[in-house]
Image (cartoon, rainbow, N blue to C red; front, side, top):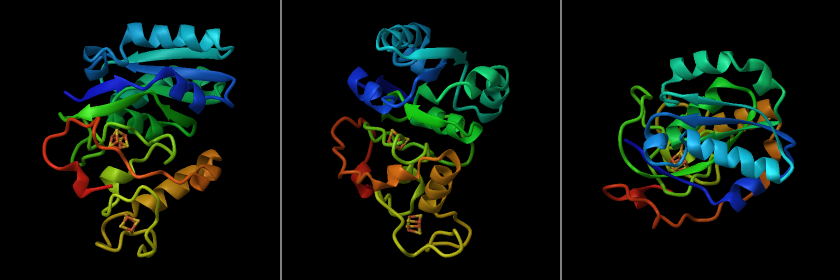
Length: 213
Ligand code: SF4
Ligand code: SF4
């Protein structure tokens, strides 16, 4: 199980400043168990965002958002509500947020920080290393800590060639993917934000996360 905590509401509100209409996604798996993104938390966020003048075009609670096939299928039923929204707020672990990002062309906002390890459904790849302070808001929903060989928070490093990482021609450059994703969803301006060095204290990950980032 991936343990996540809801981000402070002020941080979420800051993410959605420019958005008028938002679609919400919660998870009936780990995020429900952690009380960071289950039904009750999604309904609470919905109420608080509406109190701030935001419109919620709909919400979906999916059994395991980190299961890409399941999430794609579930979100297809909400295509109209998602299309009418300016963005999607995802109240799950980092793996779930990235699953939603890969399933829609909408701007994605992370509603939770993932603090401790477990197993997500993303096969043959680690997509979240539980850093405790999710930066997916700034990276188009693609984790640079888990996917860049150097764990760069501000990239690319300059070594990528033809979209591949300099450590292997078989590995996509994560920062190339981030740039392409930002281009696709119209958020290239996010790259003007410098992501500051991370405070790893909130992370409860076993081992040494400071090998990255
Ligand atoms: S930034 Fe990456 S490692 Fe940190 S919580 Fe988000 S997905 Fe996980
Ligand atoms: S080439 Fe891309 S993925 Fe590889 S280390 Fe550099 S920025 Fe990271």
